[in-house]
Length: 379
Image 1 (tube, rainbow, N blue to C red):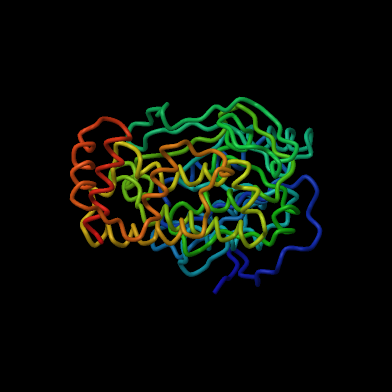
Image 2: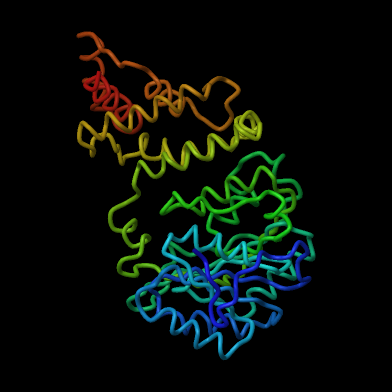
């Protein structure tokens, strides 16, 4: 149940026409009281003053509601919306529903932004009539504030005039923009025309899914190198801290691959994604990166986990024909796909001896044969 903050008025849907020039900044908040002052200070001091700052209190149990209401009393541009806890995606969706601006931006409440961020993004969006505009960002440690260069991003500037037709390559504009939601400015009319919202069932990696579903509909994109967003990492209890320490959850990666692929197929874009190398890109990111690399995830899982993950890989690969026209996969990628898609993997005595000998090889050849032996043990 969603209710409005400060004045406790009922939350009305956003009007059909947006407020020209206004940026609706959506701040999903759950138990982040110690970080809110710095975040909100950076927002109210923006050089682009035409803002509405929509703070969604997602059922916080700390002083978050008190801090938010204190700020709303000081600045009329701040709205507070209280809702039952539903997670990051649900909170962002509540903010999108309430937004009235020409543009929408997302900020995580334990982060902060440069005071020129939205002025720079609006200027660039208008210059290129971009539906989505992005900037760079700086990652820093929660403990000592140290800049984490390996997690920071300063992309080369660029404009993509038709993302739907672009071939995937490492220097593609949409790739430079990164998958995160919070370094971007979205034209609200564009999002509303698609009816897009974040998927609440994802409690992690929702930004990836949102971005990959947006791209087949996008025409003009723009990116600037300025590092205008400051992303806090290593905060105890945060999901990014868990990932940094324990690594990604493989099932969650597969969830995203399945979800995005199903959507691309639904809109008739899967064949284009194959030809343009986009599908190979997300396969490498969410599937092959864990299987063909030195990580060798199947050797780290117990037998039950191996069976479950192998079954999901097999089911997904059956729906995707890895043929000669499948752009973006090299011979080893294809070999691993054929192996993972096989059911069952059976090895006679000679083939088992061959794979046992080959498993001592370095690189992908050794990994391939070690995986083959493991999969045959699941048959």
